[in-house]
Amino acid sequence: MAPSTPLRVYVPIDAAALSVGAEAVAQAVAREAQARGLTVEIIRNGTRGMLWLEPLVEVETPEGRIAYGPVAAKDVPGMFDAGLFVGGVHPLRLGKTEELDWMKRQQRLTFARVGVTDPLSIADYRAHGGLKGLEKALALTGHDIVQVVKASGLRGRGGAGFPTGIKWQTVHDARAEQKYIVCNADEGDSGTFADRMLFEGDPYLTIEGMAIAAVAVGATRGYIYLRSEYPHAFRTMQRAIEKAEAAGLIGASVMGSNHAFHLEVRLGAGAYICGEETSLLESLEGKRGVVRAKPPLPALQGLFGKPTVVNNVLSFAAVPWILAHGAQAYADYGLGRSRGTLPVQLGGNVKRGGLIELAFGISLRAIIEEMGGGTLSGRPIRAVQVGGPLGAYLNAAQLDVPMDYEALAAIKAMLGHGGIVVFDDTIDMAKQARFAFAFCAKESCGKCTPCRIGATRGVEVMDRIIAGTDVPKNIAMLRDLSKLMTDASLCALGGLTPMPVMSAITHFPEDFDRPPSLRQDIPMAAE
Image (cartoon, rainbow, N blue to C red; front, top):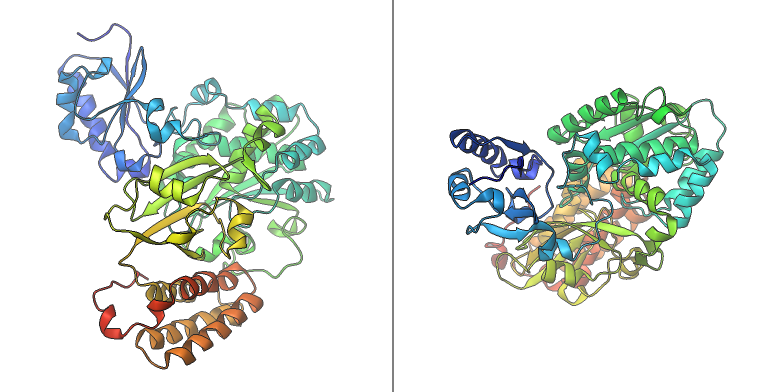
């Protein structure tokens, strides 16, 4: 017998869940409820980040939310028979969502609402702590807001790790009639999806963070630059902005204050280089996405030549929590100069891939082996790339490094956007090095010679090495070319391409001196 209270089921609408059948599951739940004469509210929430369990269906019970997964449409009738709405026993029953080991081990600050709330419900957002940060910001001066962000130790989550508060301070102090807030949501690194998850699962968080930034520095207009490959995120964010304006959260008056903040979302056109902030600004202005020389800095002469705050999604998304709970509460997480939490995106050859938000300092090994369960293939881990396609390849002996900006830099690696891609012992690292050059050659904006020509020459040198031609000579040439690209490239695309190449040579030298006949069964990384 069904309980008398309203029946509530959560079926994710996140793109990752949709890709494995979440829409069919939601429809099956609706059909089954109708056939049984039950009134059921189906809430399309974001994903909890346990992607190997998607579609993850949750049901609200007096004891809390009970999770089932991964659920297929064909499983739904049996789940109803088992007493779904009272958390009935079923082979797919996982238990209370918050008690699952994957969830219990995390410190979710930025992602606290993702998977919990109805993404487009402002009432739900408020009920789970939303808008408290903006309310506190509106009671402060711009200078005081900047000081809070500086004191929190928040650093840019897009890859560079530059202190967010210092960037805001520069824009705050700049004299100009017009200032802008720009959110870099061109999430193009391999193995990253945190921005997409936030946009699809908790869009008001980024809107709130950008509004706080606008109040802090005196900006009245904002733009979200979103990668074109995220249609679901684009639709959700557009709708969220419309609803936020209609509710008076942003627009001519931010929550009834004398601050105005108008926000738009713009789609990119698929260029990886537009993840670089100056190239992004060029694209926003309607120009070809080409890197600008610095100085001037975007904080002084950014969008349309005006002072501009350019931050990553995760940077803006961390700010509401900081304002709501205080700088010290945020700084209490992490270690050294890496404060707060880091949303780690775990993928590649791993059993349990997904998003994990943890305080800085956890080791790479703990993330991969304890949270991720090791390789999906069951073979030994051979290499791990941290920080996207321009990040270093680390070997199995380096997995105890803590996830921390300085600790990774000390071993010539970088944190980047927090993406981790795992490879087992079948990977050919010489071919991975070639892929780095091929990727750069394809994605280069072409403005500077070291990147435009250097990456192309790099592919040619790697082809000779892989073919076994004059290997010592070509490796020496590869080192010279890598130094040139590092020292002379205009931006990080060309400047960082040598990082995966040189790390592969350093940690996996045997792969660069292997007879061609032994490479035949090892696949080339896709270009």
